Figure 1 (cartoon, rainbow, N blue to C red):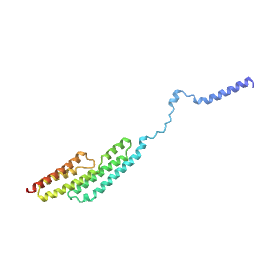
Figure 2 (cartoon, rainbow, N blue to C red; figure 1 turned 135 degrees about the vertical axis):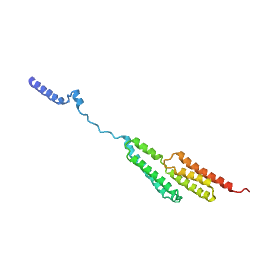
Figure 3 (cartoon, rainbow, N blue to C red; figure 1 turned 90 degrees about the vertical axis):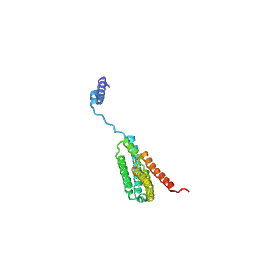
Length: 203
């Protein structure tokens, strides 16, 4: 190969390399103006974990609702005096409405914080509170009947207080309201016992 041909060959190779490298030679200003390729957002691990947890919480809410529905039509409720049964049932239905609101909040929760807030409300929702209401009203009403038959108006007044305290209890009532209802019933029963003792003639 002659020197001239060699020089032409080398020049051609250099020119080809320059053409290939040309598109890569971009000024910093041009690079800054180019739109960046957005990386697909990674799924939030918390959101992934939230799905099964939400389903579990919704099942818990549904279970509590079924328990309330059964209680509202149970013999323990239907046997209550007609003066108190409607109020007891109304309290149960109000709690079922509150439970439905919690379930809706769980279904529409967009963040983990929203789910946690609804879950906290669900944890403080106690169906057993309404069972306490039924028991206190039933016992207090029985004492009321006995006091009325005995002509003891004082005991009857205490009994009304116990029933009022019980009817104020809901599924989300604080422990203080629960204690107040139990204390009112205890006071009623103590008063009844004292009245019976006074009625027993001394030997």
